Image (cartoon, rainbow, N blue to C red; front, top):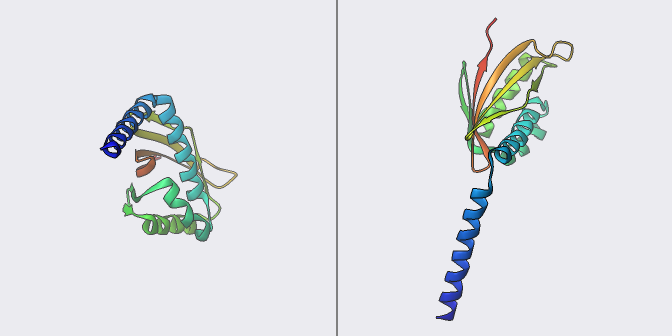
Length: 146
């Protein structure tokens, strides 16, 4: 009986702590976490070595993370990595230069430039991100038309 009471007390204390942690999160804290994820996301997209990219996905993206753009939707680490490789092959020497994230209740927006070092904004676009469980869950890509 003492074990049941002690276990129940421990469980209640854990639940109270979890609730306290959830309510302590502020929009500014959420935005800071989102910015770190976005920074790491673009590090992955700028990494030209697939062997160095692949181990980074699990810390940044959910297993079913997807990128949706005008060409289609790529889901999961392998498919997203294939997309990155194809993009880099078509645009050798190009890099993403993201601006700071704009955050609004679980959804992030990032505008970016993409181009070579001497013309980093050759292509401009915007990604809309969602976050689930502390990781990026989706990215919807919009490319500015000229």
